[in-house]
Image (cartoon, each protein chain N blue to C red):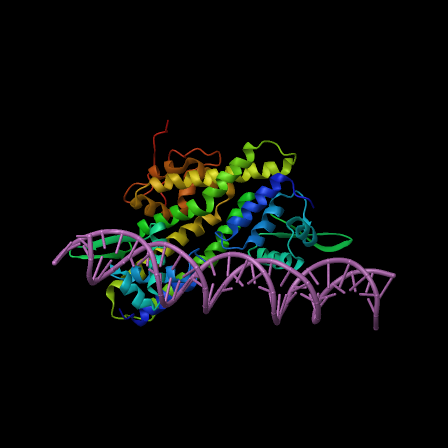
Length: 183
Length: 183
DNA sequence: TGAAAGTTTCAGAAATTTCTGAAATCCATG
DNA sequence: CATGGATTTCAGAAATTTCTGAAACTTTCA
């Protein structure tokens, strides 16, 4: 497994971005290699391609599995695990968003609710602020749940028409029932 | 600046979540204190509330300023800087998304475009994969740009109606020009 | 101008995270 | 049920990030 210059650059970039994305360099690089590879790769091949230790690869793959970002493939007569990323990029995006929500938002929503349950603590402003934040997160995650359920096809259409969609809703929140065709 | 138990818990939570959110513990805690405070606070008050060093607070506030997450207030006759978070939570969300996009997505988009500019590198699959990823990011950031421009009021409505909005678009991508009122 | 009040910078200490190599474990097969 | 190919675990090393205290700097005003 020798990386071409293209692979190299891509892999290094994913490594650098890793920390901003909440994963570490090696995990980012492993993902990058898998993403660009047409065929599934085993841990040994990844290790060689990246020049890291075998155990580091093992841990990185475990991490990627915990994020649901890689799939496992097996070939008969070979008992090593081979890894790929989904062909469908939208599936990847969905997974990424779902996992980030789970890690970055859900715990906070739980905590906010818990704080509210504890009842008044004598600081009206803080309590109102917490309630408001909880409501906002609920609105956004509720919307996310709706979008999550849409087939990719419709989702892409929705994104393509973009802000036109807002024209379909009046300020009162009603869906405008009829509309002149747009140029 | 003594923190109530409510503040305490909230602050500790934001500190813990900090690393998942791409900021560090102190920065998260500073933000939490400011978020719950009705009145603007100066660096000294924050330092005392959190029990960290003055310099740490200073660096944390600098970081929050670089994220555009805090506002500066001045009172006549006092030359210390007082900090607040915006009253409007939607403004906070917009800032957060804008900054994360800037840090987590834009550099990658730039890199992908640069890799494509370099011309064919002899791995069709990898090249196609990169192009596809670039297109997907462009679609999503384009949609984001559209949403960014909407007034909050409409945005909230949009989120509230949620998936109903998808019913307004047919599979071909045309906006359905008329619609029976929904129950 | 210089003293006072406040803020920032920065080098090193402390803490945390990541990475490695060796040992332990797993498991299909002879 | 032992062997050997493969993976995982884990304790410590290495690297990175965060935090601190001291010094430097900035601004205001007497």
